[in-house]
Image 1 (spheres, rainbow, N blue to C red):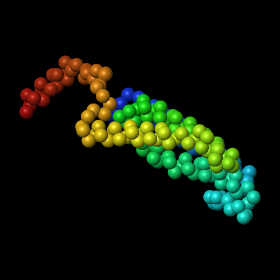
Image 2: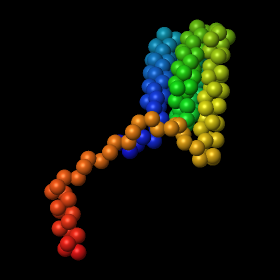
Image 3: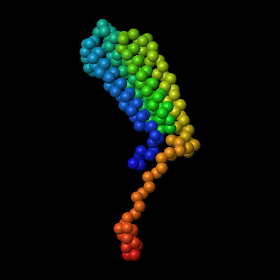
Length: 177
């Protein structure tokens, strides 16, 4: 497959981390749906108003935890994909740590005390900075024209030897011309 060779070994794990983050976001979305029912905040209301709902702050904390993860998702995905082309192992490790910190950011926020989002969630910035470094390294490699994935360790697959029928057919077509 021609497309597979352009990605370094281990890049598939980058995809798995991105899917794990998607599952985390789906789970957060379900938590927002449950909070809507629990705190009586109907659709399409994005944030509850405290003067209209005594539980507005509790709902808004759940909603905001999810919303913040959605806001950062495009940045995270872009850094993972671009940085992962040059540094797949580092990006998998950093992306996994980032995903875990987003879980704790959300669960802390969902308690209704916004300060609790930072207990472990505050460390989510560190893996993002690491991913930025990997992406910068990828960009520098492109500018310098260097190999993105290092030396090729696998031997290319050789074409099968030509059969006698194919060889005879080639000779006949040359004789006709």
